[in-house]
Amino acid sequence: MDDPAGGGAMSAAVFPTNVPSAAPVVATRRAEAIRWIAGLHDELTSFFGRLDRGGTFAEDRWERPGGGGGVARVMTDGVTFEKAGINRSAVMGELPELAARRLGGQGAAAGATHFFATGVSLVVHPRSAKVPTVHLNVRYFELTDEHGNLTDCWFGGGTDLTPFYPHAEDGVTFHRALHAMANRHHARFYPDFKRWCDEYFVNVHRDNEARGIGGMFFDHLRPDDASHGLDHEGVQAFVSDVARVLRQAYEPIVERRRDESFNEAEREFQLVRRGRYVEFNLVHDRGTIFGLQTNARVESVLMSLPPLAMWQYAPRYSPESFEARLVRMLEPRDWVTDVAGE
Image (tube, rainbow, N blue to C red; front, top):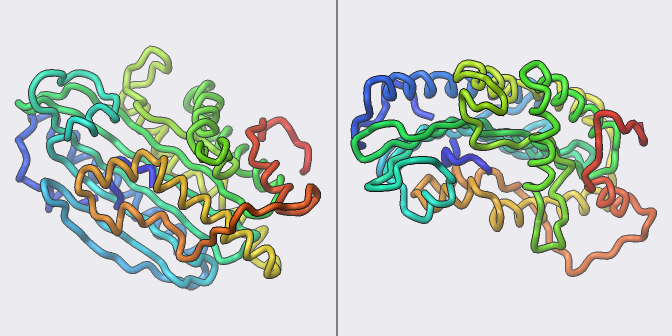
């Protein structure tokens, strides 16, 4: 899931009151953040509804014990997508000590630490073994002390692609779109966040095998940081563009591959690779762990899991098989300038 907001956000009208009150400027910013995420959630739902060509999303609203809640929208048995989940949430409360340490926030060292997080997260699992799975999330996080004073705030998010067939040109399409989008905001964002993504989405327990071909991943992106010089509005504008980049990065791949045929062996390998996706999300993903530690709704936390997956015992593939070529394609590379395989 990789969404510290716990999956799935509430409208301002139902903003919870069962938490310590924040300072007025903090409360205003939180309300604005909730509206921002709700707008992105609606955009993404509309986008994937259109891209599926026939499926519909069911909506489920939930409340979190201790503060907050969210909206889960899930498409099952769609035309193009076997499962698509798009969640938004706004959650808050007091942080357990272990969760506070994992977050890496600044300040609030003494006394209780309270958090506020809102975000939208999606994972889309296509039917076709030729169409990659895609994940995206964006989020905003705040920490306050026991008196409601802001001690830290940051943005996070990213998107990554998990193919099941070695079409190198799809990786080029995806990464070049991310590169062009990020360069409109700062020249270091794409190379820095691509490297972070390559290092993060790895099944360490499987000899550092990559989950997919990466994309961009970032966390603790704080306004007014000297490394980028963007104010709060500037950082939020970049994060908004991340949320909208799949129109350029993913839609062309779906349109290119949706009608390609696939055989039983290719479907089986898709399910095996989905199993590796599950392993990462349950063992290593920080958002999943955070959600489970903070009483987030389990159905929303585990929304990212595919409807079907497979685990084979020690599979072996011949060096020139499509399976082996896909595994080799997962190794980090420069997708923007390295055009080999196009």
